[in-house]
Image (cartoon, rainbow, N blue to C red; front, side):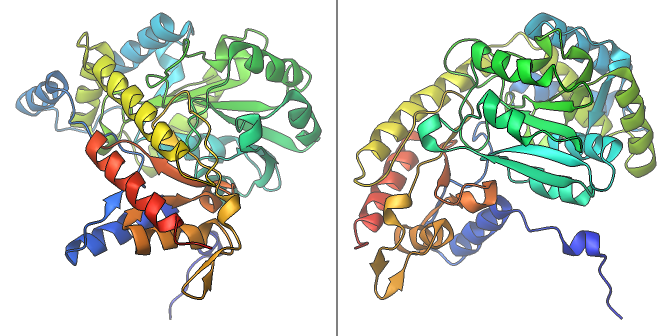
Length: 397
């Protein structure tokens, strides 16, 4: 007899991973598909980091590591937080996990009780919603639009907070929009949060090293809320290490202890070799990170210029990460070959079928009028992909 728990039945399949799988299947059939769906840098991990991993193997880092991470790695992360972000976390407040997803679900399971409300700012990262529901929390979604640069206002935030609010998840630079909150914009939200000391704030800063205008600002630098901000980061995006699966948090000590306890029962410490590579990453003096950021900036300017030339498509220039999120509302209701585009899902599959370009529907991110495009690929592929999208959308009437 087959029996799947309600918890797992309620989970949705990640649309980003599903679209990536669909792209791979078409490629295996010999179809030339350009995939702009996954949030993955197309660069190789820098050589100094790879060498550190090879040395770790030779040095026999093959035994169980400490549950929260090796002591020298946690110290290095604490140093990174202090030097790069102006945050004062001790090594005991650092927990190393198997990627940002693992870090986030550890936090939510540790602080959310059934029925507790968790505020999400839409468009939100695809897994936030399922993490909240799996933790038996109640998602409270604040909608934004492209006209507001996909940013929430203090008034919207205040209206969403209730006596049941337990957590706010904040993400800047944003996946999926690429938008970055300014210090003044963050200060406005902080003034609201100061009134609600029971609310825990998760600040997802995984894209901090891919910021194109101004400096990255960590939410925990606002002293009035520092003691209840959990700063989430990792090496995947900034160091082209998605497959190494290393994320980490800086948290209030009570919460770090809870996550350590939870991780000890579910996964124990994460891969020893990957941890040694992560140590090399967070202490690296190479310019690889800067070069990657420069490439992403060039690609951003290219894709935004090309997308802006498509009639009917509404585009805002992102200030960070490597995504752009055009509004496709003008194409909803249009048809081609007897098929009407009812929503972003239909348009996403139309683009895959007609243009052979894989993007992700905004519905995965709580933004039904948008699509997410990753420009973490070459200039040539970007140019060809947008050309195909323009030709496909031009068929709709």
